[in-house]
Length: 356
Ligand code: CTP
Ligand code: MG
Image (cartoon, rainbow, N blue to C red; front, top):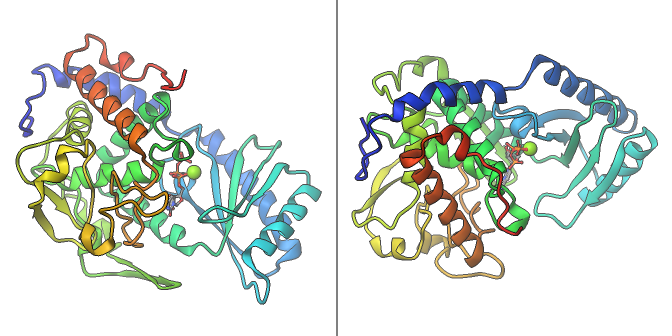
């Protein structure tokens, strides 16, 4: 049964097998995983020649269970860099990689997290490499642990990711949301289903902690003890997919619940927000406190998505007035397709680019 103020169609579950088959087809093959390993091995060899003590961590979708065939490989090098700056290390790394025949090597040093981007002709993957970004390693583990809690998170994740890529709304450089932001939105949605499908791992007694720079990453990673947590909820993947799109398209008249990153489940009394925010704010402790109510430089905070650990970081800050409208239209279209279309498993994922 749907428990939203909008009811979903009676035959929604008849689309579950089609969606499940699509999910299965998006999962990574063993061959893909072995090519990924090949890339990591050759990268480790190149890096080891110059930096003997460097540790190589995979992060992002190649390590958090949410990777698809189109995902890149994200690598973090953990190393002592002494008096050199991160940018100097990245420039040196670029030279090392070029000498070892990696292709399209480019140091992107002006980004919030500076990286070297390159492609590997042997494995066919493109790869982003950052230095000492252990926060990303910690949030990758958090997402992976969430993925172990309930299979429906993975199913929903793959389907929404496929939709977002097909509809061109997964491109931060054009003002839409990152894959990481979408994963957090899906986790939040499943935490607030009735009955709940996912627990809030950050709200439980921490069994994993990592402090990096000034940020403390702490949560319970005892996911084996939570395997039955969502069992009372019998929602099918079709119902959840519809619910996900429906959930994020206010305005709603009633107060809306937010699951804060530190666990309190509260009502938001500021209903007026939703009269102009068509995608809801997510996991926000206090927008006032964070100064997320007004535009600061390029950060507009039209959609607020609080990072689970770096709580002062708004993952929605890339969204502008034009792209919030595009996102709103795409979410509305997706909910409507699942509600009314005769063949939603096809129509939902029809390719579209709002600029063409
Ligand atoms: N990340 C982050 N803060 C952000 C964006 C990303 O910490 N604002 C980190 C997260 O660890 C995330 C990783 O960078 O998992 C990769 O981000 P992204 O490319 O958005 O996600 P992927 O899951 O790798 O998506 P894709 O499969 O599309 O590559
Ligand atoms: Mg990635």
